Image (cartoon, rainbow over all chains, first blue to last red; front, side, top):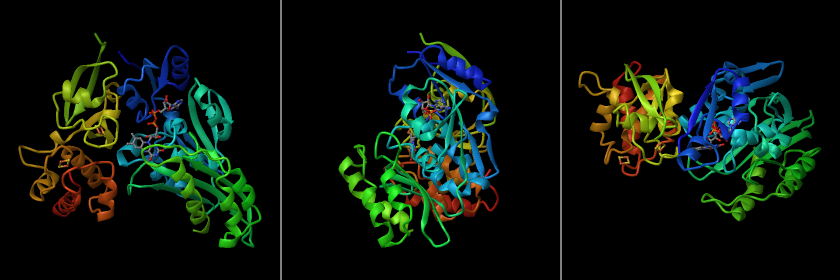
Length: 264
Length: 161
Ligand SMILES: Cc1cc2nc3c(=O)[nH]c(=O)nc-3n(C[C@H](O)[C@H](O)[C@H](O)COP(=O)(O)OP(=O)(O)OC[C@H]3O[C@@H](n4cnc5c(N)ncnc54)[C@H](O)[C@@H]3O)c2cc1C
Ligand code: FES
Ligand code: FES
């Protein structure tokens, strides 16, 4: 089979090319080129865009906005994104990080999608086909999206509010057993006033741990204070099974790592 | 017959143009068309690092890169490191430190190490381990490779060229 590649100078042209025929967008290619090499016949055209807007990073007024083509490596290098850099650093090895884009991570099936887990905890907005979608909604409909994602934006978390852990068996790089991202804000007395918690590998895509979030509000981040949230974190999970870990194992270790993340 | 498309690159300092199969990976194009067999195809799916090359200054996996997407790019492979038949400091350190056994991972290891030393001429052991974390070696147990990269860094006090 011949795979055609279309290079478009603007996002608009790329979007139009995507709408026509059996085309897929080519981000960094770490997943889609692999699929093509493995004989995936569901597409015959890869569309790429050299639009500079796609690789733009803007940090201003407490908000960050990232073009869909921004790579994990670019995020780790940007001084304004230091607070969330560890989530980008968790993706693959150095070569993968030089290639892997934000846009591609939003579509990556578990065990991949570690950065998307972070974006979910950050309450990101995804711009797709000229529309802005909350990330929770976006992830629900991503399989049906036939248009281009152009970028994401999210409020930058207060200092120390962003927490992230990726658990893997091979160090320093390795595929996720699970990943957890959380944005937790506390008041002057140390009580949690808001919490968003996102989990990776606990379904085929990132999910919110809503019961744990609810249990955290008003609690203090102490052993006794977090107990309810830790007990609630597994509510509604359907972990994946793959060669890295079984669903059972992932479910068993989730509360352990969540507790450690909260008490860290 | 698969459609052929022209791809023009600067490969190891030399301007080159070839027709490659539409949708071909850079790895297959380099080995099959450009005649540079230094990048190795281990897994063809991003996990082994044997195909690592430096594209426009950044370490990339040539098995997951489309040749057509590299039109106009500057590509450096291990084949381009030696100057006038004198080995690059990294090559010498690998040879002297027994950091290559079967040698299959070596070109990828050397590219990953070069990408590190280009950014950080004086890396720590942890920097080296991190920089090589996308490259698999089935022979050496890694320790000689880590030592070789540190030795190459020590041998060239300035940026590794
Ligand atoms: C060895 C290896 C290790 C990895 N390790 C990790 C890891 O630790 N953590 C992790 O999260 N991931 C990992 N990945 C998976 C992958 O590299 C990342 O998820 C990456 O972010 C995907 O981005 P990409 O740009 O390469 O996607 P691509 O392969 O280019 O695209 C993936 C999918 O998203 C679609 N897409 C991409 N961009 C857009 C857009 N702008 N608009 C619409 N659709 C789009 C594509 O059409 C395709 O269907 C790994 C992959 C490999 C090969
Ligand atoms: S051949 Fe490219 S990473 Fe293995
Ligand atoms: S020397 Fe044989 S794989 Fe590394």
